[in-house]
Image 1 (tube, rainbow, N blue to C red):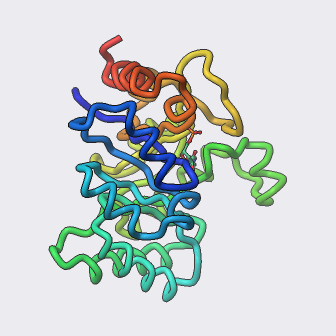
Image 2: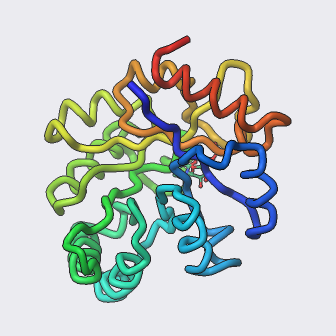
Image 3: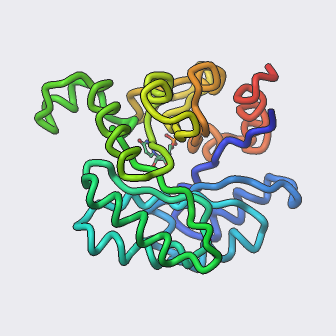
Length: 237
Ligand SMILES: O=c1ccn([C@@H]2O[C@H](COP(=O)(O)O)[C@@H](O)[C@H]2O)c(=O)[nH]1
């Protein structure tokens, strides 16, 4: 197994990314996450630049709007040539189907990016879900409900905590993707995350991809931290 953790490039500008990437060997092809912070500052050019360096891109903009708006936005995202992107499952089945349609229409090579849906953010606890969202079911039930909705809408998978991945895999088709942020090596600071799992545990619990930000980006030795997390994720330590 040689799976790369997806590195969340949560930086405010390209200059800070250049500094961060200078810790990595030039030939190391990474799978990186471009999120709102970076994309809203630097725009689509940041995607083109990262691709030109040989990196794979997960564009994490978590779209959530009326179906027509999301469909049009996804047409543009497909033209950027990213590898994976996402919406919020809470936008509903019609919105998710429209997102998929937009991606298909926008991809000139007939290979649209992988499309996944956020179920419950990994920074949300069960208690917060009850009070903030007014839901009375368990968090796991809510996540499973959103995962099934995403599958029915034709999406490739979901964003969830690794804590829910095994149940989702059981309830969906065999190649359904469970991309799991909220990853923390043993003893690392949890920050604002609530449903956290170590890289080794995420592997055990059937995550398809792990997304890791601060344990790598805020490390004094980013490349060493990346390699150590990658090894743990691949079951090598
Ligand atoms: O439910 C979600 C969805 C997305 N994220 C994103 O993943 C990274 C995690 O960063 P850490 O620094 O490792 O906490 C971040 O970019 C989030 O936007 C998530 O954490 N949870």
